[in-house]
Image (cartoon, rainbow, N blue to C red; front, side, top):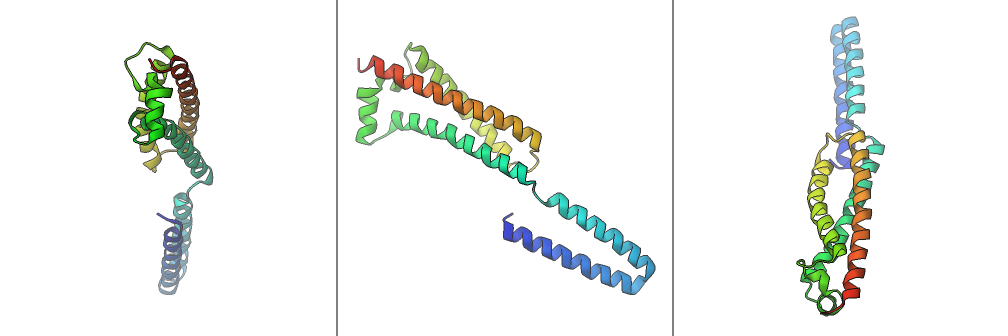
Length: 171
């Protein structure tokens, strides 16, 4: 729900509670006042419960950035593998041909391919956590730490694989 929609629903809830309070007090007098007080307290707690925690929102945003970092590296590899531009073809055939060949025995490239495969599966799980409204702060902290670590390790493996492929050169 977007922010204007949340504000509107909060205003409608407040107006509904106010109208119910007035009706209860006017019709039931003292018992209506007690029921109205209970209604106001319940509405307040429901409203507080529905408000998103800014810290959780910040963690979700950070997790999204870590996810984007991983996807950026995977997209660069995908572009190297299947890109149609002249630069992509030159990279695939002249500069990094070993990276374009998954059937090689270069440990750095094999390490990157393993991490890239793992990162694709991890991204699918992260997407599920990002979409789930039930993901709490503790889970997000744990996932964020893992995502940052995986993004860093994948970047290192990508750099090492590119360096090793560049050293091998065209065969």
